[in-house]
Image 1 (cartoon, rainbow, N blue to C red):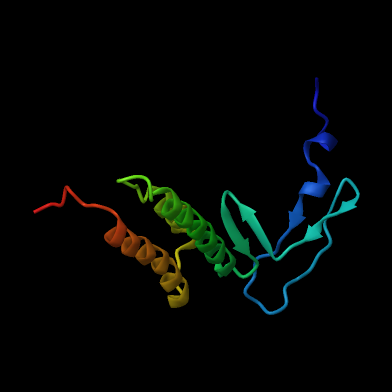
Image 2: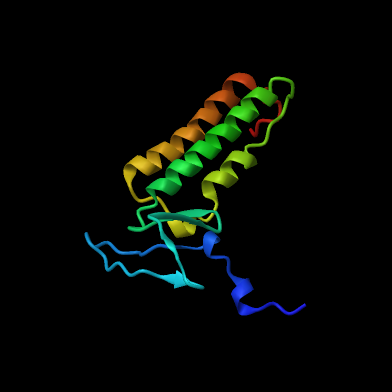
Length: 133
């Protein structure tokens, strides 16, 4: 079966985003196979939420919510277990951080609050039998 170029892209799954720090950017109407593409202000690519000004505020909110859900799951599940691994939450918080590295103090504080929440839980509820001297 040969794939035609028209079948390669689905216009309903495509969108347009312009990256600029200017107040008003140049708006151009893009079409794919005669269908106008929707313009969006935020898009998710490879797990990183990109906004039109590249501030990554939406991405920080997204990972905070996802890490909080995972942390809540860990809190519920570890009531029956003696050991827990924080790699689930930390991997969410650190995924692609080289790209979106938080530089606003508010974003850094929100991310660190998730880590502090886990540490408080671990110190209160988990038995530590193998502490280094």
